[in-house]
Image (cartoon, rainbow, N blue to C red; front, side, top):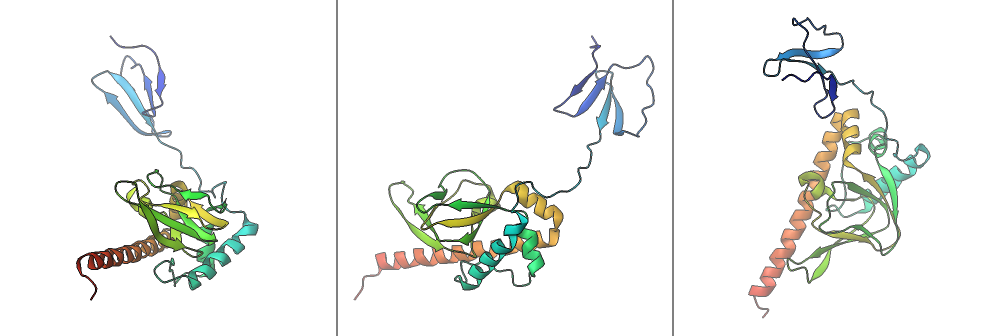
Length: 232
């Protein structure tokens, strides 16, 4: 039995119409594809999605605050330890401005958590002001300790950004902090706006992640040496 209703399938973005007595030619002016489904004898028109014009995210940093945010981050990056700074030495002022146009600022009061271990999310956090302590938990969840103290010019959340997994450590504000966050949709817009700069950012984040892994590996090696080799 052939249904007689004409409808629009929102899930598949298809218009479904009962067939005419004879198959008719469908013009391609408004459709990207036209075909006949022989199993149901339905005429199926695949609607071409409209290309939306690119535009700035509505929640990006206001232009009047953009220069201040860039200056805070770049100054902090020049003063931060090499293993904690996001280094993009070839970038010009215009490149940093392009990046921070796709972020949103957030204030974090002293004592508040910015990231909680185990939570989901792929947002990146660029530290503009203040210091945050990164805390790791033991596998049994009963012990925790400081992994790093992160200040202006550095980034948090890069591991979950890359692998999409839960947050591996928590981070709380030691003092009043300001961060610029880049959510996944903001990164996608940044990548669409400037593919070359997005590639540079990924390499910079990858380097930062590698440096932090080296630091962690060195700490583990020191702990093993202290445990197995007695002091004389």
